Image 1 (cartoon, rainbow, N blue to C red):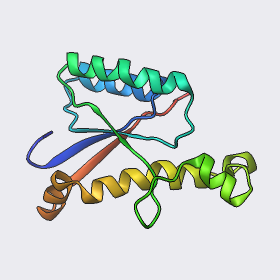
Image 2 (image 1 turned 90 degrees about the vertical axis):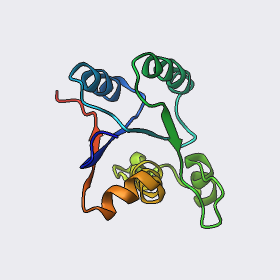
Image 3 (image 1 turned 30 degrees about the horizontal axis):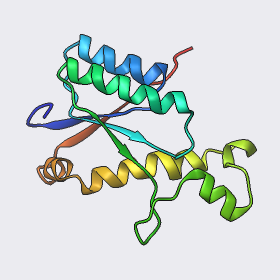
Length: 139
């Protein structure tokens, strides 16, 4: 892990900013312990294809693979963004200027994964931190 005191977790979106973040962390020798990709089930085909390319790069550079997480129903079945829109008869909240889909299909599954991931639980039990890295466009 990134040290006895914390875990370094990257929220990976498969785009330019989160890829640059991973490359920068590697270049600056900042250890990465966990990389999560929140799969809405509605990403572009090239995004899914790029995950395999990025996984090879990560392996070649001694970094952990990308772990795919996704939204589930209460009974543990996967719920994609498309299924949710079809069930509700609406467009994703982004179409109306809101970010509920990101909260529900991206942030929520990553937090749920971490909450049940033994290394995160161990760090929290010791009173330490899980440091979450997110790549953003600074422009």
